[in-house]
Length: 379
Image 1 (cartoon, rainbow, N blue to C red):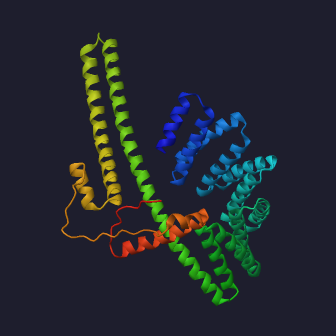
Image 2 (image 1 turned 180 degrees about the vertical axis):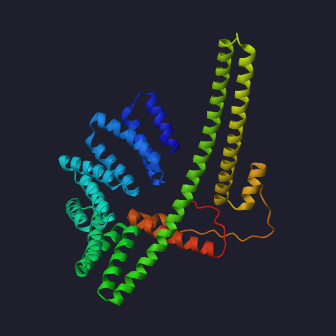
Image 3 (image 1 turned 90 degrees about the vertical axis):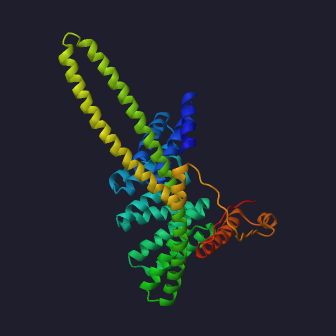
């Protein structure tokens, strides 16, 4: 967020509208990621106005899809449909398969969210066709699992199994945990409806294992969101202080002008002005103190979410944490043997998956035995 804001400021200084708009759009994406939809919409709207003025159709389609997804999450289905539909119209006119897949998938999700399965199905089928044409495995997995899920919902369990199984295979190829989870859920529900308890149990267990992996990822996201909220809190406190200073300066200017205009009725005007000013200032100070108290409590709560209480208290008292001496400790150094040579023989996807598995195992062991991981370095 900070880097994009600095970039936006510099692009504005040199009048680089194209990159300024890109940075603005990225800021909106970050706000959307942390579910701050109000700010996300504000930045998306700014970027959309520029894209509209420049008639940049591809970017309009992308940002309309992002806006539509915010409306979808807020339950504003009519507005979401208008945004997704405009995105699809542009994608069709440009014959851009990637944009078409994006818009079709969003429209399918919109009607699926409303349980309008017969309306959602054509969009997913068309999305799958375009995904097959360009060889997009992820889009294929999303479409096949969505189609399979709708078939399950509408009672066609045999076809649901076929589509969900194909979607799960594609999801495994792209190593998407969330898609694999959705595929396993679909197969579990379909086999359960077919009274095939053996297969249903197998995919139920697979889905639970994948759910654990998703929960670990979600926990990491929550930690990052706490950091983000902490920074937002710092920014909001700075903004309150700045606004306070501006208001005080404005108030002094008003008082000076009042004195100049009211020299004739100085005594009465002065008494009334001072009385009103003191009352307003006293009321403002009370509100400011209450606001700062709330912000301080929020800041301390966020700090305790990030650091152990003992460390947090020492940090607040001294501004730093003193090193501590322990008479006896055990330190483990561990390494991936022949990591560089092994990495040269693996694809990036396989390498990341393998590292993820190892690090996940280490983290579980560390948590179980209350070990502290000091740092992770190396290739």
